[in-house]
Length: 316
Image 1 (cartoon, helix red, strand yellow):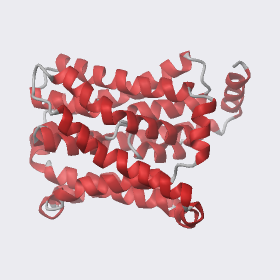
Image 2 (cartoon, rainbow, N blue to C red):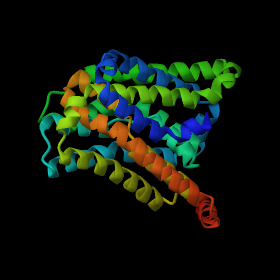
Image 3 (cartoon, rainbow, N blue to C red):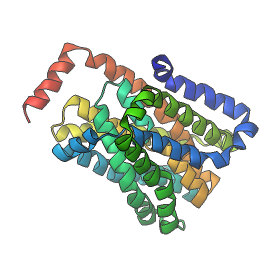
Image 4 (spheres, rainbow, N blue to C red):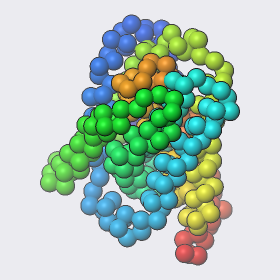
């Protein structure tokens, strides 16, 4: 299954092409997006152990800085890009919504492929997902209140159902039935990837007509949003003195948003047009993340990177 997981970006592109051509079939699965997303969050909860919570309590700085960057940097970048490129109100809403979401579960897989700090990635995804229950609707309300109506309470309840309950349930099961979870643990990343791929396919199918009409500026905005998030997450975390593995992980977590959640919320609270940035982000961030993971993984094998990692740790 490792080879299958490593080819995740390829499957995303191929399945997106299939979904674009057979949009009727995948489009009929629209109602499955939320349950599928909740299932991925449940699986993520199954991967959380007491050690993850212990890591946070012992050294919460990387998690705190990463989550703070995620909820401060990404929505601001989204609004700035949408303003500069003069996107419509609905596209702006979709951009800000994606920027206001927590880190996606795909980031955990990308971090693993990059040989990053997987425990930190999971911890950040967990904390940002839980914080996002409150942060996402509040950020959307703050940034979008003058352009579109935001159902803050409704968004809060939806995120609770999609994120909070499944993650908590999964972590509780792992705590009380850890031996049973261990028997299927090796399959969880692959199962998550399959579900994420299906979500991407459904999103592409639902937006197939809009994708045909997409403007170059919207595509540029989504790509820049992701790349600036990755760059900002890495550079700012390095300024805090974190080692390369931690900074790579924070960069991935900041730059790779839970765009599937963003699309689900956009369809529920805004419009199909508002879901378009999230749909594009879903495909693009997996491609850019996997390419970055391949590069960092190869660099990490060099002696220079090993030494830099150790120097960063020793100077703390």
